[in-house]
Length: 293
Length: 293
Image (cartoon, rainbow over all chains, first blue to last red; front, side, top):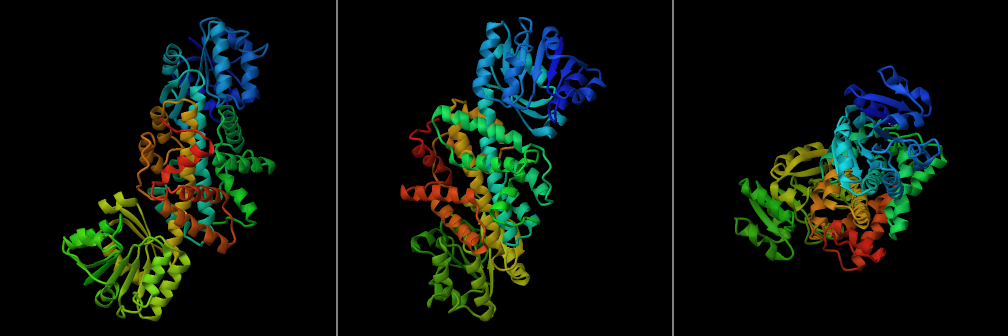
């Protein structure tokens, strides 16, 4: 079985490597090409998208934005124009549920199977092969893809039909964003109130207000370390997708909207490549103050 | 050593019982008086506040609101007017940091010691004797109170000087409130998107967006069970205290302010005695929709 992997960035690089180390033949593609070098050195073969589409039984995609994904699937030099009937497409990009449905429908027309399979767990989860993978699509396609995804996923689930994987991921991001807002507001409050932040963190982390993200990120915040595990620009994409879906479904989520405005403010300040916990910088600017623990 | 306990409500009742079961002589007081019956049947003695103040070495307070607390400490029939020099006051009410400072200063004038010691863990934590207790005050007073608090506290910490216990609790509530907003918005989104909520919860709870409150409360939300572990009216008090402190410190916290408005809306709808996760009802009304999983 020949596998193809498109998108070898901070997460895709590790996921592809797990497939390679499991003994699979792997074609890889990325823009820029250099980011595939580490995989090619381990035995992967760089190939163009049409070449990969024509030769592989399963193609995985893990790119940044829905627009790229659309071009990759529907473009003249893309996957649908070149894949052989019977092949399988697995998309790990966090993307629009409606695009996932369109991809699934187009796949069916061409006797292909497509699974939307966004992941959670960040670069660390990808490196350790411990991602949560939330899938949408038909059960037969999912069963074909599952043993491969289990090379890098610890919790691989079929959540429902096409697009439902994406909806699950967006739900996850909505809950996470609330945690992020509470966390950075709590940190600014505690800092201004003169608390010992280490003691505060030990207490809050173990109580009702504790969260997985709080535990993981509090040590970074206390060092003013805003390096990304998860980029602001990708959360901005995800929140935009969630708000698009809200509009389509006719619902409003005011907490999410406020957080979205804050993250857009970070984009305006050129902070798109920081980690999402750098949200505290928005509070610093609004308050004309410094968080310097 | 004689102990006094004022406030035997949903949490205070269990905390006092732990002291009683540890073999202490205990005076109790509450409005209404009937809520002390369960403790009196176990050997506690009901007494008026002045009687208790004159006879006890340590008096604990656990009442609802800062105004009650102020009357209890500073009123003519209150604690300061009647306690013997050398006695200890331990306040478990979540109250204002500045009131905690005033109480501590007044105590010092009267050769008393006062500790502010708000708790986290809810009625369940109180019943099991596993509360987190975050204290402010001087070290000697804390060391005297600690062995008693450890009868119902699993994590009893001196966080700093007078008022710092209260600041720590308010920080905790700010973080928790962010979690609550994200959680209920995520639930409404997931419901409208047609997800299997049980599958969604299993996935979200274990990932980056998971939190202690999410794990504890998701099963209730999925049953439309809005019974209180933690009352809306008490969170409204806490958020008001936090926003008062923000004003005093000259900072704004927009996420907290938005959540505060939502909880005030619940008060306007007579929902003060529901659990805090009933916040989803605000979203139902804003969206003219039902969350009926």
